[in-house]
Length: 585
Image 1 (cartoon, one colour):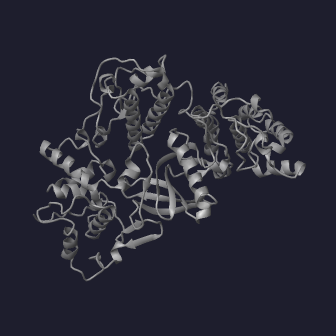
Image 2 (cartoon, helix red, strand yellow):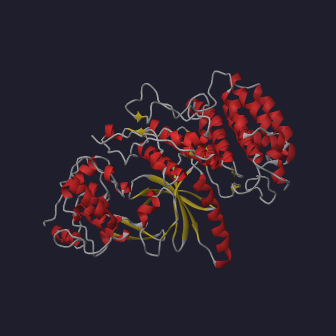
Image 3 (cartoon, rainbow, N blue to C red):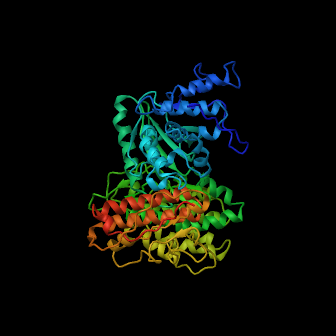
């Protein structure tokens, strides 16, 4: 069989001629375009047909594979060769290319690409393949796809977010785009997935000598344990994690525009940013309510650990967070403050502390936010504290903070005085007198002023899982608008509406739907905590969908469905409510 060459289209996104192959560990890389085995036909004397011959070396005559599987390195080499021959769009989906070439249906590749399919869709199920494929082609594709299911694909595509190990020299499926920051914790950079082409933040920790290795690993495991349990619209999301011989690494989403410190600095001169800053009060409180409800204490809340992406504020950096899921209570004495400026008095004094310490730290952040809304500078507040107590730590300036709030109350717009009422309770010296995150959120939502102190995503009077009259083309319900507000969380699990974006309307085939089932079953009430988490995941998917972030929405719905099936047990198929999913058009 001859090699099919796709014509170059000017509307295709250009990729660099030199395709950089990143391998473990970061910093070790090779340039395919400069390697003697992968000459660029545009810059070398090697004939174009020779590049095609080298591409053909990965396949035997007739398109049959010469071995049982392809490695990540081989897949990236194939991608580089496709790019070198001018087929940029094909080079972005090397796994799909390999499978279609092996089954002698390479003429279908542009159809896959036009429907928005990338390598991250692998592995495909019967109904997740494009609807135009014949039954025989479907069967061939499903049988052959196992040859390209590598560990790189698992890193980004696996719902359980299990850890991945890369051996020395194995390629990593990311391209580094920018350096974001560093500190004692490690380094953060912006990367692009070579599989999904999505943008992520990667946090790396360099392995050190043996005496420090145990400490490093424990710190890494602490953060990854917490991140795996977190799924909330106002918390950073863990995509995956891996180790190689030199590094530990997290892959996280989203890549933030800035942190809250930087945002507040720019908000001083922007009325639009100040209006969004007001909504962060409720959204950050809701994020903390979720953490505490999940039995997680953050323990290091400060503006630098709050990220801003578009109009969202996100809690991040859970390196010293406490997971008390398996403890009888959250009160501890052993943990110390990482950021003394924002730590609670009981933490600074090494007394017993619990989740109310997070409330104190968030109250300090709220006071800085209110200072900006009132037209004052945070540096002036710190100078005000330091002039009286030789330092600007909040726990040592309780009276000064009250005095500063009194001054703020006389400045600016009256409606911006509302946060001062919450902050007074949050900065109470007695931990037991501070409000819980849930009570604080209720206070914020019940505020009767003409401005919003909470985003629509977190307002208690707006159910983010409800559809609207105007979004019928985007969402489909599963059984007549039944919502999750039922008496039992166990019932919520069984009847939770799974709303999927109508991807078919956007030229993208839907993923595999759950088959319609009917029936009833008794579900034990012990699953309530799990149910609450699944509903959070589902609602996060709804929020992503309404923002037009369909790939992220679909990932959340898949996790919710997988979690529901796991809890309901092996007989779940007979108990699930009917779920309708849009079919490819």
